[in-house]
Image: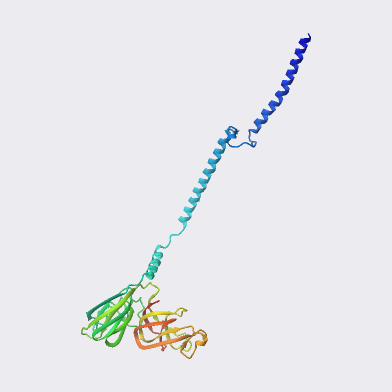
Length: 349
């Protein structure tokens, strides 16, 4: 009886102990399950590869996230490139013609001028110019769209005149100055210099060079000419026709002036060939002068303050050529009526 009672007591104690242990174990299992549903863990990398994040392994979730971020970056790059292409398409096309012209000018300015020398003998022929049919002409450099600049050495069988043509002139620019044309449409300003000799040396600038007489019989001329050909668009080559205006200089109000190169701080240097509708004077200005430099020489000023030394050369001719240097270049008369002058200027360094 005692043994049976003891067995029952032991069994009861065992059951109670088993229940006491089983309760905490169930609680621990529940806590681990809740932690696996998103609570941060102190384990990383390979230690977490078997853990579950939602319906996937945590390692798979991270791989998907990396793919999504990479895809998003690629999409941003693609959108950026597309936007750049759209902006480029919206930019107006560059003026290629203007660029070509500018490049041509720069190239012409940068290209060194080739000096040419030609020699020969010519027997003159009847002048083909309208109104010159009874004259004789020997063309040395034919009409060109470029400007010739050089010097001529000549010896002829009789006294000759030296001829330079400037042009063709724009419509309406033939206003009284001597003109040369073979058809009445294409017209050139005619510079005719009569030195009344049969031999000499002459500097010239223009679109054609010839030797001329007003006789009907042919003459012979032997020549040597050294020259360069200059592009008109070059900033150092100037050609045009101008009508004079009242001289703005104080004390010159009753005179006429055609300013070809305006006053500049930098001195000009070059050569001009000209033909005008009447005999003219050639003018260069040097300055401005300092107050102490005014020593009685002729001056030119528009306001009485800024003063230039006045160099006035009177060839008493309506056509000719001139080598000049100064801070301005002009053509002048002491008459009240306007005159017209056609000219070609080559500036040198």
